[in-house]
Amino acid sequence: MVQSILLYIDPNSGSYIVQMIIAAILGSLFFFKNAWLQVKLFITGKKKKNDHISNDELDNEL
Image 1 (cartoon, helix red, strand yellow):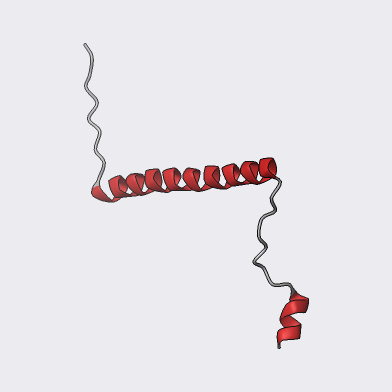
Image 2 (cartoon, rainbow, N blue to C red; image 1 turned 90 degrees about the vertical axis):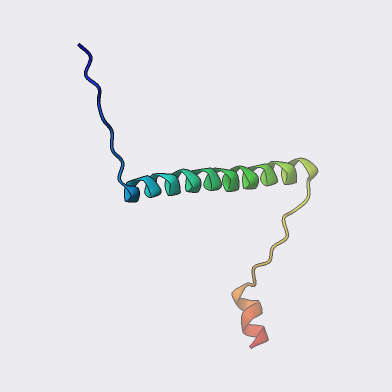
């Protein structure tokens, strides 16, 4: 005789599981978007714009 297994997920665990699934999807989309950008920049030979300010530039502005 096969026993049926009753599974119970309380609301807190259920919302946590949904949150983790959404975070995994969005994280993977962000990762693959950045990976595709790197491949595209490598193929086209363009350099990525550097928006960071070096410490020397920051000292000069102060």
